[in-house]
Image 1 (cartoon, one colour):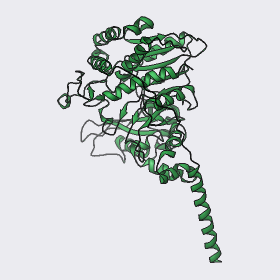
Image 2 (cartoon, rainbow, N blue to C red):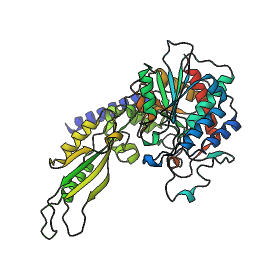
Image 3 (cartoon, one colour):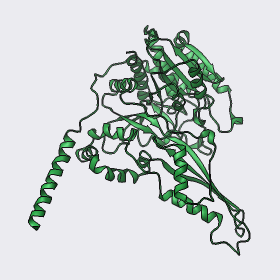
Image 4 (cartoon, helix red, strand yellow):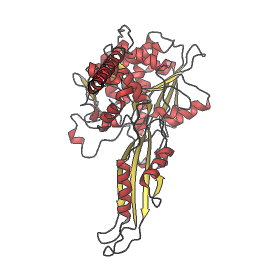
Length: 488
């Protein structure tokens, strides 16, 4: 009997191995095959223009009293002077004083318009870090291979890059069939409520319905995807929602010599501990799952086998992804306790305790379901739960489709300019201005082929922001190809 059981187990093991291998071999690449396209651009001129553009201190501040309108208005004039053909042929509108909307009317009004986006504002220089900059942050210094300055990565390159592309196309007599909008908000770094949101409202009022939108969010990465040596061009199909909940509780107060069994701090601390130990459940559905379907076939054999057999190995993959902060954020709504306030003196019992808990909401969840999760986990009805600064909160964006015309146009354009790149959909963990356009567009894609390595990640919003001249030239080439590929 024992021999029969061992034999049966052996047969089952062999069958399982055969199934795993067969599924791995049938796990085919989703990469399209297109011929590279040579696109001629004036590298010296576009380098000069971006250098000039980053010199304008178009800084967003959370405190509206610190807002300086002069650099924004000066930047507007700079664009008019630098791109004369664009401003002769496109309709230009100033929205809410500092944001810009351009319209390049197409010849076929039956085609839904498309939109390219960017934002004029940049983040401030962190106090005490100015001495750490290799070149002054608003100098626009040009070296042999790079352009230095705030906005070279985030994200004046999108504004100037798209205008460079259109200026070049107009100079060659190109006329679009599909109407093209350019939307450049002025306050993306503080939520976009006065810029992009107002542009979206204006277009909605006019009855505009867009075929697709292209904004920042994901990039052309290398060295960020374990097991893949080639560059990976990630295209964001959606972005997470954002909400911070304030948890608060009142205590009895009094002298610390006669304390209760648990103070307000103790009770709230227990609730916070429960939240950290019980995060919202992970999932491989949605944009992250689609990413694995695209990158899995490009990985070494053993890793490829895992992605080809998620029917069996999904728990293993989820456990691995949950183990790292960077990958854990791609598969669930994250929980981050960011502030705790209580107490006035070491010998006085606290009358009040509060904590702020930030959640980045995964598609499929909402602010409402997150609140229900908090209440269910902390199991303490005496703790009040309310949204902190609701004006900055948002649900996840709708998820765009990889089958959409816009995704296909972006995919083809990337391959034409960056032929060795692997294209894959993904989820954007942060927020962009594009979320404001979900009322007038079902397919919002977040990608600019900005070359990012592990060393470059900290430069975004950080010190020594700079872009490779060659990469910026290729971004302009990408925009040119995208505009042409979008006319069909």
